[in-house]
Amino acid sequence: WDILVELRKELVESQRIRTQIISLKITVVGGGVGLVAANIERVPPYVLIVASFSALFFDLLINSYSFSIKRIGYYIRCNIEPILKETSNWPSQIPLWEEFMVTAGVKQRLSYWGNSGMTLLVVAVGIASLYMPSKMSPIADEWRLLLGIVLIVFFIIVYWRIQAQFRFDKTK
Image 1 (cartoon, helix red, strand yellow):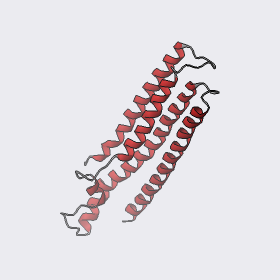
Image 2 (cartoon, one colour; image 1 turned 90 degrees about the vertical axis):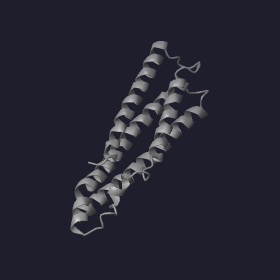
Image 3 (cartoon, rainbow, N blue to C red; image 1 turned 135 degrees about the horizontal axis):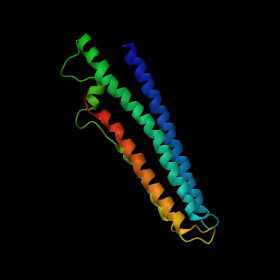
Image 4 (cartoon, rainbow, N blue to C red; image 1 turned 90 degrees about the horizontal axis):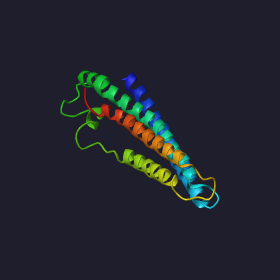
Protein backbone atom coordinates (compact mmCIF):
# COMPACT_ATOMS: atom_id res chain seq x y z
CA TRP A 1 0.00 0.00 0.00
CA ASP A 2 2.82 2.40 0.86
CA ILE A 3 4.41 1.87 -2.55
CA LEU A 4 1.10 2.67 -4.24
CA VAL A 5 0.72 5.85 -2.20
CA GLU A 6 4.25 7.01 -3.08
CA LEU A 7 3.77 6.22 -6.76
CA ARG A 8 0.50 8.15 -6.82
CA LYS A 9 2.29 11.15 -5.26
CA GLU A 10 4.96 10.94 -7.96
CA LEU A 11 2.28 10.64 -10.63
CA VAL A 12 0.39 13.70 -9.36
CA GLU A 13 3.64 15.72 -9.23
CA SER A 14 4.46 14.72 -12.82
CA GLN A 15 0.96 15.78 -13.89
CA ARG A 16 1.42 19.15 -12.16
CA ILE A 17 4.76 19.79 -13.85
CA ARG A 18 3.40 18.72 -17.25
CA THR A 19 0.50 21.14 -16.86
CA GLN A 20 2.93 23.95 -16.07
CA ILE A 21 5.02 23.14 -19.16
CA ILE A 22 1.90 23.13 -21.35
CA SER A 23 0.89 26.52 -19.93
CA LEU A 24 4.38 27.85 -20.57
CA LYS A 25 4.30 26.48 -24.13
CA ILE A 26 1.00 28.21 -24.87
CA THR A 27 2.30 31.47 -23.41
CA VAL A 28 5.74 31.46 -25.03
CA VAL A 29 4.82 30.06 -28.44
CA GLY A 30 1.52 31.91 -28.73
CA GLY A 31 3.11 35.12 -27.47
CA GLY A 32 6.03 34.74 -29.87
CA VAL A 33 3.76 34.25 -32.87
CA GLY A 34 1.58 37.17 -31.77
CA LEU A 35 4.58 39.43 -31.24
CA VAL A 36 6.00 38.69 -34.68
CA ALA A 37 2.57 39.03 -36.32
CA ALA A 38 1.98 42.39 -34.59
CA ASN A 39 5.34 43.68 -35.81
CA ILE A 40 5.38 42.07 -39.24
CA GLU A 41 6.47 45.36 -40.85
CA ARG A 42 9.58 45.51 -38.64
CA VAL A 43 10.44 41.81 -38.21
CA PRO A 44 11.17 39.36 -41.01
CA PRO A 45 8.35 36.79 -41.13
CA TYR A 46 10.77 33.85 -41.19
CA VAL A 47 11.52 34.58 -37.54
CA LEU A 48 8.33 32.57 -36.92
CA ILE A 49 10.44 29.46 -37.54
CA VAL A 50 11.81 29.97 -34.02
CA ALA A 51 8.29 29.53 -32.59
CA SER A 52 7.94 26.31 -34.60
CA PHE A 53 11.11 24.81 -33.16
CA SER A 54 10.16 26.06 -29.69
CA ALA A 55 6.80 24.29 -29.89
CA LEU A 56 8.55 21.03 -30.79
CA PHE A 57 11.07 21.38 -27.96
CA PHE A 58 8.21 22.01 -25.53
CA ASP A 59 6.49 18.90 -26.91
CA LEU A 60 9.56 16.84 -26.04
CA LEU A 61 9.38 18.10 -22.44
CA ILE A 62 5.64 17.51 -22.26
CA ASN A 63 6.08 14.02 -23.68
CA SER A 64 8.75 13.11 -21.14
CA TYR A 65 6.27 13.81 -18.34
CA SER A 66 3.44 12.04 -20.18
CA PHE A 67 5.72 9.03 -20.59
CA SER A 68 6.52 9.08 -16.86
CA ILE A 69 2.83 9.30 -15.95
CA LYS A 70 1.89 6.40 -18.21
CA ARG A 71 4.84 4.31 -17.02
CA ILE A 72 3.78 4.76 -13.38
CA GLY A 73 0.20 3.82 -14.23
CA TYR A 74 1.40 0.76 -16.13
CA TYR A 75 3.56 -0.35 -13.19
CA ILE A 76 0.68 0.11 -10.76
CA ARG A 77 -1.74 -1.75 -13.04
CA CYS A 78 0.57 -4.67 -13.76
CA ASN A 79 2.44 -5.08 -10.46
CA ILE A 80 0.68 -3.38 -7.55
CA GLU A 81 -3.03 -3.72 -8.32
CA PRO A 82 -2.96 -7.52 -8.79
CA ILE A 83 -1.42 -7.88 -5.32
CA LEU A 84 -3.92 -5.43 -3.81
CA LYS A 85 -6.81 -7.21 -5.47
CA GLU A 86 -5.64 -10.61 -4.25
CA THR A 87 -4.81 -9.61 -0.67
CA SER A 88 -7.85 -7.41 -0.06
CA ASN A 89 -10.57 -9.76 -1.28
CA TRP A 90 -11.54 -7.13 -3.86
CA PRO A 91 -14.46 -8.34 -6.01
CA SER A 92 -13.03 -9.75 -9.26
CA GLN A 93 -15.74 -8.16 -11.41
CA ILE A 94 -14.79 -4.63 -10.27
CA PRO A 95 -11.51 -3.37 -11.76
CA LEU A 96 -9.13 -1.27 -9.74
CA TRP A 97 -8.42 2.21 -11.13
CA GLU A 98 -5.48 1.57 -13.49
CA GLU A 99 -7.07 -1.66 -14.66
CA PHE A 100 -10.27 0.29 -15.38
CA MET A 101 -8.35 2.93 -17.34
CA VAL A 102 -7.34 0.46 -20.08
CA THR A 103 -10.87 -0.81 -20.70
CA ALA A 104 -12.57 0.19 -23.94
CA GLY A 105 -14.37 3.50 -23.96
CA VAL A 106 -12.79 5.24 -20.96
CA LYS A 107 -9.70 6.72 -22.64
CA GLN A 108 -9.72 10.13 -24.22
CA ARG A 109 -6.86 11.85 -25.96
CA LEU A 110 -8.27 15.34 -26.40
CA SER A 111 -5.33 16.96 -24.60
CA TYR A 112 -2.90 15.09 -26.85
CA TRP A 113 -4.71 16.29 -29.98
CA GLY A 114 -5.05 19.82 -28.62
CA ASN A 115 -1.33 20.06 -27.88
CA SER A 116 -0.38 18.39 -31.17
CA GLY A 117 -2.80 20.60 -33.10
CA MET A 118 -1.23 23.75 -31.72
CA THR A 119 2.22 22.51 -32.67
CA LEU A 120 1.09 21.49 -36.14
CA LEU A 121 -0.40 24.96 -36.73
CA VAL A 122 2.75 26.71 -35.54
CA VAL A 123 4.95 24.44 -37.66
CA ALA A 124 2.76 25.14 -40.72
CA VAL A 125 3.00 28.89 -40.03
CA GLY A 126 6.77 28.55 -39.58
CA ILE A 127 7.17 26.80 -42.92
CA ALA A 128 4.89 29.31 -44.64
CA SER A 129 6.85 32.17 -43.07
CA LEU A 130 9.98 30.99 -44.85
CA TYR A 131 8.30 31.85 -48.15
CA MET A 132 6.57 35.09 -47.17
CA PRO A 133 7.92 38.09 -49.03
CA SER A 134 10.03 40.42 -46.92
CA LYS A 135 12.17 43.44 -47.72
CA MET A 136 14.17 42.95 -44.52
CA SER A 137 17.06 40.54 -44.38
CA PRO A 138 16.05 38.29 -47.25
CA ILE A 139 16.91 34.67 -46.73
CA ALA A 140 18.52 32.61 -49.49
CA ASP A 141 16.39 29.92 -51.15
CA GLU A 142 18.85 27.23 -50.05
CA TRP A 143 18.39 28.27 -46.39
CA ARG A 144 14.61 28.35 -46.76
CA LEU A 145 14.63 24.82 -48.11
CA LEU A 146 17.09 23.55 -45.51
CA LEU A 147 15.18 25.11 -42.58
CA GLY A 148 11.89 23.76 -43.91
CA ILE A 149 13.27 20.25 -44.32
CA VAL A 150 14.94 20.28 -40.88
CA LEU A 151 11.68 21.47 -39.29
CA ILE A 152 9.61 18.79 -41.00
CA VAL A 153 12.11 16.04 -40.13
CA PHE A 154 12.26 17.23 -36.51
CA PHE A 155 8.44 17.31 -36.37
CA ILE A 156 8.27 13.71 -37.65
CA ILE A 157 10.92 12.53 -35.17
CA VAL A 158 9.21 14.25 -32.22
CA TYR A 159 5.81 12.78 -33.02
CA TRP A 160 7.27 9.36 -33.75
CA ARG A 161 8.80 9.43 -30.25
CA ILE A 162 5.57 10.68 -28.70
CA GLN A 163 3.75 7.63 -30.08
CA ALA A 164 6.02 5.44 -27.91
CA GLN A 165 4.12 6.42 -24.77
CA PHE A 166 0.95 4.76 -26.04
CA ARG A 167 2.46 1.32 -25.56
CA PHE A 168 1.55 1.67 -21.88
CA ASP A 169 -2.14 1.80 -22.84
CA LYS A 170 -2.07 -1.96 -23.38
CA THR A 171 -2.26 -4.62 -20.73
CA LYS A 172 0.63 -7.02 -20.02
